Length: 108
Image (cartoon, rainbow, N blue to C red):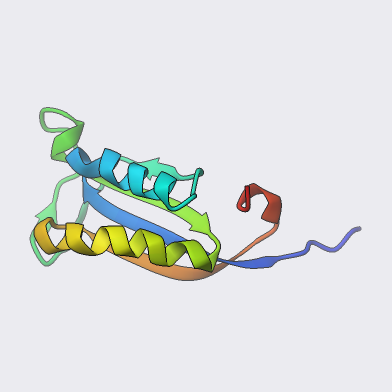
Protein backbone atom coordinates (compact mmCIF):
# COMPACT_ATOMS: atom_id res chain seq x y z
CA UNK A 1 0.00 0.00 0.00
CA UNK A 2 1.27 3.46 -0.89
CA UNK A 3 2.34 5.69 2.01
CA UNK A 4 0.21 8.76 2.60
CA UNK A 5 2.20 12.01 2.37
CA UNK A 6 1.22 14.69 4.88
CA UNK A 7 1.87 18.44 4.63
CA UNK A 8 1.85 21.09 7.36
CA UNK A 9 -0.91 23.70 7.20
CA UNK A 10 -2.87 25.95 9.58
CA UNK A 11 -6.46 25.36 10.60
CA UNK A 12 -8.38 28.55 11.34
CA UNK A 13 -11.70 28.45 13.18
CA UNK A 14 -13.64 31.71 13.47
CA UNK A 15 -16.77 32.01 15.64
CA UNK A 16 -18.99 35.06 15.09
CA UNK A 17 -22.64 36.02 15.24
CA UNK A 18 -24.49 34.89 12.11
CA UNK A 19 -25.02 38.45 10.93
CA UNK A 20 -21.24 38.73 10.41
CA UNK A 21 -20.81 35.51 8.42
CA UNK A 22 -20.51 37.28 5.05
CA UNK A 23 -17.77 39.51 6.48
CA UNK A 24 -15.69 36.48 7.49
CA UNK A 25 -16.26 34.75 4.14
CA UNK A 26 -15.20 37.91 2.30
CA UNK A 27 -12.00 38.10 4.37
CA UNK A 28 -11.20 34.49 3.52
CA UNK A 29 -11.67 35.14 -0.20
CA UNK A 30 -9.50 38.28 -0.03
CA UNK A 31 -6.79 36.27 1.74
CA UNK A 32 -6.86 33.75 -1.12
CA UNK A 33 -8.66 31.04 0.85
CA UNK A 34 -11.49 29.59 -1.23
CA UNK A 35 -12.50 26.52 0.77
CA UNK A 36 -14.23 26.42 4.13
CA UNK A 37 -16.86 24.68 6.22
CA UNK A 38 -19.64 26.55 8.03
CA UNK A 39 -21.28 25.23 11.18
CA UNK A 40 -24.51 26.99 12.18
CA UNK A 41 -26.41 27.18 15.46
CA UNK A 42 -23.54 26.73 17.91
CA UNK A 43 -24.14 26.25 21.61
CA UNK A 44 -21.58 26.89 24.30
CA UNK A 45 -20.39 28.92 27.21
CA UNK A 46 -17.85 31.72 27.09
CA UNK A 47 -17.12 35.10 28.60
CA UNK A 48 -20.63 36.29 27.72
CA UNK A 49 -22.26 33.29 29.45
CA UNK A 50 -24.16 30.40 27.90
CA UNK A 51 -25.30 30.75 24.30
CA UNK A 52 -28.19 28.61 23.09
CA UNK A 53 -27.72 27.20 19.59
CA UNK A 54 -31.30 26.88 18.39
CA UNK A 55 -32.69 29.26 15.79
CA UNK A 56 -34.46 32.16 17.42
CA UNK A 57 -35.88 34.26 14.60
CA UNK A 58 -33.32 33.95 11.85
CA UNK A 59 -29.76 32.77 11.21
CA UNK A 60 -28.33 36.19 12.07
CA UNK A 61 -29.28 35.67 15.74
CA UNK A 62 -27.10 32.56 16.27
CA UNK A 63 -23.39 31.84 16.43
CA UNK A 64 -21.62 30.32 13.44
CA UNK A 65 -18.18 28.79 13.04
CA UNK A 66 -16.18 29.00 9.84
CA UNK A 67 -13.42 26.39 9.58
CA UNK A 68 -10.71 26.60 6.96
CA UNK A 69 -7.26 25.16 6.31
CA UNK A 70 -4.62 27.32 4.66
CA UNK A 71 -0.90 27.80 4.17
CA UNK A 72 0.70 29.73 7.02
CA UNK A 73 1.43 32.74 4.80
CA UNK A 74 -2.31 33.42 4.35
CA UNK A 75 -3.10 33.47 8.07
CA UNK A 76 -1.57 36.89 8.68
CA UNK A 77 -3.75 38.58 6.04
CA UNK A 78 -6.84 37.05 7.60
CA UNK A 79 -5.84 38.14 11.10
CA UNK A 80 -5.21 41.70 9.92
CA UNK A 81 -8.84 41.88 8.79
CA UNK A 82 -10.21 40.22 11.93
CA UNK A 83 -8.32 42.36 14.46
CA UNK A 84 -10.36 45.57 13.98
CA UNK A 85 -13.55 43.50 13.75
CA UNK A 86 -12.96 41.89 17.15
CA UNK A 87 -12.32 45.34 18.66
CA UNK A 88 -16.00 46.12 18.02
CA UNK A 89 -17.79 42.75 17.93
CA UNK A 90 -17.84 39.56 19.96
CA UNK A 91 -16.30 36.41 18.59
CA UNK A 92 -13.11 34.40 18.68
CA UNK A 93 -10.52 32.89 16.35
CA UNK A 94 -8.56 29.67 16.94
CA UNK A 95 -5.46 28.73 14.94
CA UNK A 96 -3.83 25.33 15.12
CA UNK A 97 -1.26 23.28 13.27
CA UNK A 98 -2.68 20.47 11.12
CA UNK A 99 -1.45 17.95 8.58
CA UNK A 100 -3.25 17.47 5.26
CA UNK A 101 -2.92 14.66 2.78
CA UNK A 102 -3.97 16.39 -0.44
CA UNK A 103 -1.91 19.57 -0.67
CA UNK A 104 -3.29 20.46 -4.11
CA UNK A 105 -6.72 21.08 -2.52
CA UNK A 106 -5.31 23.93 -0.43
CA UNK A 107 -2.88 25.67 -2.79
CA UNK A 108 -4.91 26.83 -5.77
